[in-house]
Length: 498
Image (cartoon, rainbow, N blue to C red):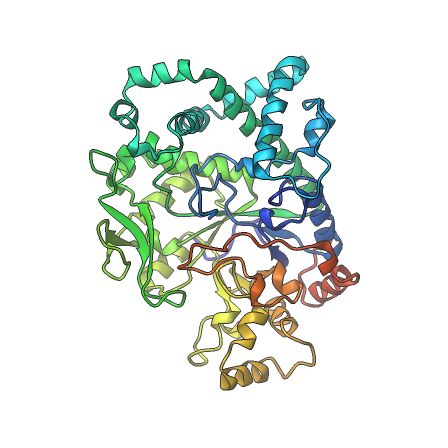
């Protein structure tokens, strides 16, 4: 494999933003695929921005983290917009006229929509639903049953269910499908709505020259449909508990490391099965997105194994993973493979070699550039062309928050490196990203709005007050799109057709 990207895949310089869809404004408890998403696409087009990067879009659990989803295939029902339901005639009641519609109120609206769909939908819509259920059956049936059983057991975790369901005895599953048929119908419909709205948004974006850039966590949440349905693919004991869990050793983000708690893959079994689990997973994501970031890429070369009984990540060890075998198999099914490797943290020569063998762009984060010496790989003049540069990521402070928290001597170094710019931070860093040799430059929305650290998306190692940030349109200055477009053009990142 070559280090250069395949023809047609990021084969020219471009710019993008990082904004999770939940951070869009709107009248519901979280941003969704409604009018505000389309308005954002229009803003991106006007600004000359070609890429909208977001976080994983699967169903979230209690902590709200998009990196601990209950399915690697399903869409998060919270992202469904209720406005199109009335337009389609699938919701006969008046939508609530209130400042904020809660998640529970949205869930009731979706259930009313299902009742109205069953009573009033035209034949073409019913056929569309049937085709969706058939096309997505490779994951949808397990997910729907998992969700229905969760509700039946008052959201107990699957390894706490009765043994015959936990271990997926055929008779018990058949009985459950019969007993829960009404719930299964609604869950399938909910996913139908999600995918229908998603592909409408994606088509709108693509038609305006905007690519959707997704995010795929390397590991899978323990309490998920896929771990329950494919227990043999994970290192679990007879009762469904992990024998060891995933995480990372101490790094930039945490002095004690991070214990993520995800069960580890049974890589030998996966390889014997031809990596079918990953082929199916990639199939779904490549339909949803034009480009995908693989989180924690270094785990494909070696992963940090933490004994399940240990409370902290520091007591773990590196275990070799079959990255070459996996990517060889994926390339047999999907070539080109439009992936970006999240290669932050302590990266060994072996990890770097694995990434380069398959031509995958890595990540360069400018907030990491100003420590060490001139060999620091995050300094702009060290960037590889085949890479994606960021001012910061969803795990970082905002660039303004980062800058004001620096020690005086480091801040002086940053100012000097950036030429003592007369622009206020974070614009000197945004310019540095746009000027980088990296083929793609991604700017978090918080940085484009010049927001301080109180607007950060996530603080690694904590579980409260994360993933809830939203922007407001009145935070966008009237000339922001014009200024962005001028800078994007100045640094050779404006598409010729824009």
